[in-house]
Length: 236
Length: 241
Length: 60
Image 1 (cartoon, chains in turn brown, cyan, green):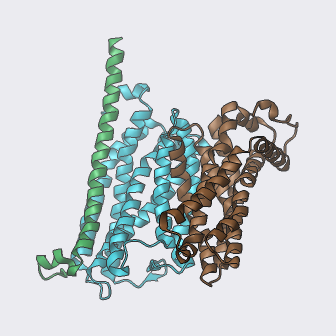
Image 2 (tube, rainbow over the protein chains, first blue to last red):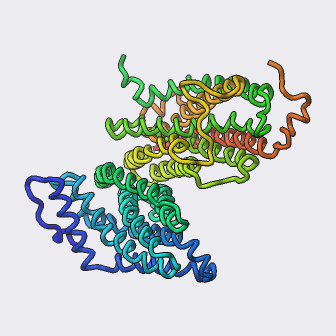
Image 3 (tube, one colour):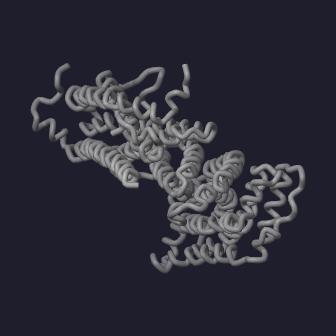
């Protein structure tokens, strides 16, 4: 990750220009160094395996706790992927260059988050049905589970991204990030796990999913700008 | 009137020093009156029994926990927009008192819930979002103090506080939006279903809490000013200690 | 304004809910006392730091 990895900035900037540029760049970097993405998914699978080992592999119990465990595992994995979002760029000065680019901060911040989600949240979502099968979840529950993760993990990336940007270069590193991000994750967890649990017990998952959807829309509208501002605060 | 007169730290330092004692005195007087009404005069609730009296501190502290966060967020907005030092200091001064009220609201609610709902805690919308509020206060304080440069801490924490403001309507409207265990509001601008002594006691205690919060914030901001402005000439001069 | 309770022991007993009521009011009292103490400590520390700086400057 050298500054030369950045393509030359155009003279006039735009949201889509910044978005596309940042997303392409981060995806390219993740492709060259896939360890972060692989570790995130591996962590998820590992955590999900720990629970049956710790609690006992009784099938009824596993089916009962499955939705919650899967969501917590995905949440923790998404959380662990957060430092990688800005840390390297902050350290080598690329982040500062981004704030100086003609593209609005809104654009490239959203682009980085999008790339981050593709590399962390999306694989978690795609892997969740497999984990769900381990826990003996029914097919319709698996579907709702994956849907709730598909809607919820972008929210986690946005919220987590904001916290990661705010905490750049702070003392207390990971613990501080946990203190900031995990409480904000809690409502997402409640509705996400609540959706699949509702489906599993025969109730409608629609209210939970719509609330998650509303949270996603609110996050998409409000947070990229906040993240851009947080980065500017960090590099100034 | 020159509004920026009081935004100079030494001026505000002296003003806060003169005003703070009055707020504490007012708070104490109101609290005595409120506790008299709530603990001694108000009749016992027919359904819940005497434990309902926790309402006289639970509701005021809960209201203040939200109100203080809102005020803190306003100061944070000022900090980010105008880059003024004193607004950031006021936000930092409010946070610990806000956290205290949030903790007490959760604690008293928990002890009220045990005999009435049968449990100390439940993950319903209002309780969960109030708990998130407590962590927002902690996060604010931790973030503000996590940097070598206090100005960076001011601005980062200010942005965090503003992001967290979305939690306030969630707390407030949670009992309307969801079918929660926590009861809905009994007090609104249209009227109340509460017994008049109970209502008076609750309102008096709310004012007491508010006056206390102002007093505590003014005292704390003086320390914050001393810590931040320790290099300034006026700090070495007379009338500071 | 008549007092509701007919005796002090009834007041402290709070109709059997004494534990919950007094844990609540007690916590608030404790929190306020702790906060006021911490406010004083913080102020004293800030003033002491300034004193120290002033002394160091006077020496130079």
